[in-house]
Length: 256
Length: 239
Image (cartoon, rainbow over all chains, first blue to last red; front, side, top):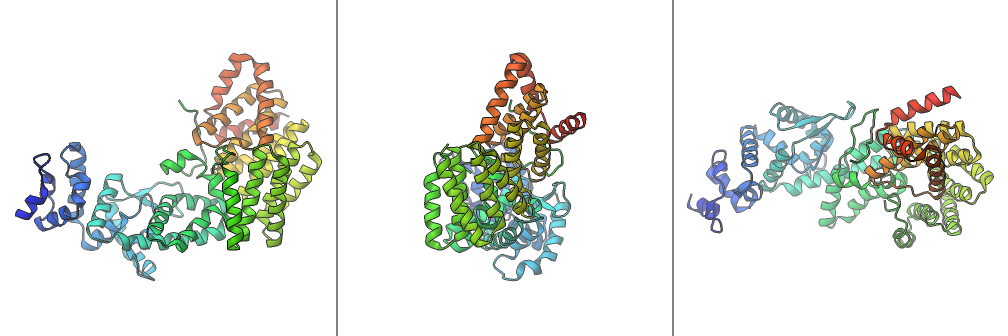
């Protein structure tokens, strides 16, 4: 407890960082997070808006109530920056296990259903039921990301994401030319933020060959540079990562 | 991406390096693709001879690789330069060949070809043909969400509307193109399309006068692809 108080006390501000967390975490867990600076980076500062502190503490409370396998899936999903497919979720849960993604998918489906029931995950409305997408509210995703770091599983999850993206890029390379072109353009767009994150991580870890396998799909070869004309070429969408819903009525309005 | 945003100043150095690296690594597809993109950039810069040279090199490489989408794209780019040079017959021959090659490659490859064919039709004064071709293109664009092609496809459509004497419709379509460009960052990068736009806008502005022009142009900013397609259907039925 002495160690905990010493870690939590800010000399600069003369305040303790973590009162809201004391309501939801055991002292050992709280100390571990403080030592890794996981807690402080999210909401430890008392100058954060009270509403935000309350929201994060609420997510933390929900997390503590999850079953261990649901907690595992939840924090692994924190590696995904945006919306994701069930296959993508299974890949980050499987991590570095070579054949893990396929074996894990049934277990992940169960956990995802549980997380949806507990409002920690949402099904994203894409207008297409063929390839359902899931996503987290940003506050929830940020908390999952912190839990991932606290568990020391970030690289394991990112390895799974990278493998998923390499596989998807290979399939896209074959399918972006031909009758299923539109379907695959949407599929690549849906995963764009995941590909970006995987590319960044691979380059940080000097895994250039895999990065080229992903990059090659988007900049050359059989995809013929489609993103440069189709979506990356439109700066607004490449910076926000948002794309219009798949719908037959696409409206563009003049700027105000 | 820079080219799609209308920047033709920076890409040449990058493309030169890309071609060099592709040659060193033996990646012939990337090298050929860089040649075709270089052709578009040179065309956008007004360097027609250089553009034709790059398209020719890309065409030769893609033919040797037996890559239909690449061969068709190189032919389409060459046709665009021929069109700009006033060699309409040769341009149309190349576009026909490109269409045949690209039919099975997917709609993304067909929209530039349709745009060039629309420009050629408008230049000949064939309003219904230009409008019909852009109807086909807008169908693909709706499917693909391809804003770059959307910005371009609306300009032969506006020319077609003007040729049919419906200047307010032409102004609305021009306004729609400008709104998409403004909201997406996609710019008109193809010289012959820009030229057609300038000619159409001048004529329509003059005939409508400032007030009617501005009203119709602003109204265009609220158009959807579906409303544009409805307008096309109505225009084609009435002709």
